[in-house]
Image (cartoon, rainbow, N blue to C red; front, top):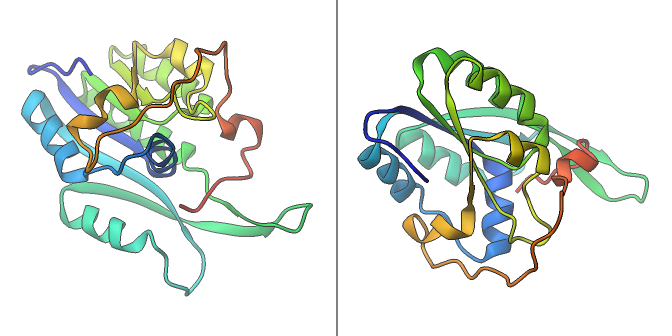
Amino acid sequence: MLLRQNERTALFIDGASLHHAARNLGFEVDFRSLRNLFESQCLFQRAFYYAAMPETDDYSPLRPLTDWLAYNGYHLVLKNAREFTDHSGRRRIKGNMDVELTVDLLEQAGRLDHAVIVSGDSDLRRAVEAVQARGVRVTVISSMRSTPPMIGDDLRRQADLFVELADIAPSFTRRQAEPRNTPRQGPVRHPADINSDETSDS
């Protein structure tokens, strides 16, 4: 991941993107180990975690995770997800967190040397370019090995460094990742690039 001991570093996690990539690659994230990894290898500033919560009184499976993160050093950025029914009658959740992540990234840029973004959404490309112009090095963590690939080509090319999630997973997972043997593909689009109105509530 090329963390440097003398760099002020912050971590920006798109919760839905990390969840889907990890599930696809076959592992569960140990968030305590993830934070410890950063604290031991750089001048760690803060970890942001972004999640859209269902706008309902029903129990959300996300709640235990977000509660744990809040008590264990993560800065939570939550918003209500909106439910809707698509043209085929399926229940969908709209809860894209790109704007929230972008705002925090820009606000933190003046206090950082290195921003690590866990997301593959190409909509973040312009935000990455903006903080790079302020002298911040940007690493993007996502996956080309998931099916479909989770990293948008525009974002991958804009980042100073792209890190394959499956390669670093053993450092912060409860069970080792089992990467799929998929051939390298050409430029790809993140699922959110194709239809930003449809995203999972997982």
